[in-house]
Length: 102
Image 1: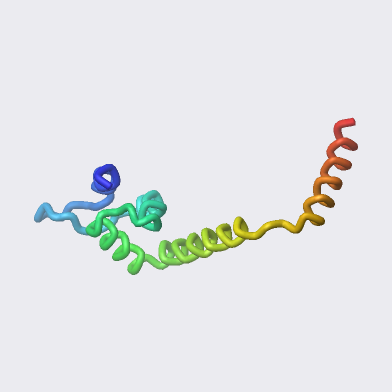
Image 2 (image 1 turned 180 degrees about the vertical axis):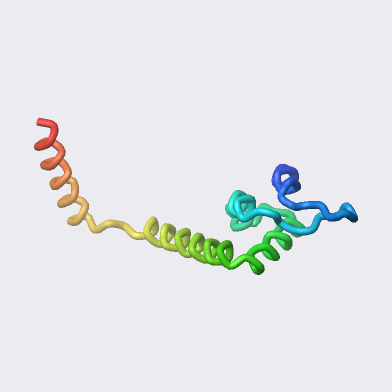
């Protein structure tokens, strides 16, 4: 988590009072998205990132799509292909690959 804090420290601009204020680019928000979703951010960085998301429609939409994609991938990996479909797929691939290479 310390490494996350070090890397995340550059993500915030500094106002004239010297305190960290806001995320200043969408690219930086996307760069730390995985850490955010994995719960590897400090509470301060998480709060500031969430503040960025709530004020940035494109990032908010990207986050929703990213979460949906991760969920779909997990569901797909949980499913097992029926054995009969797997055998037909292997046969199809062998036939088509050998026809193209032979």
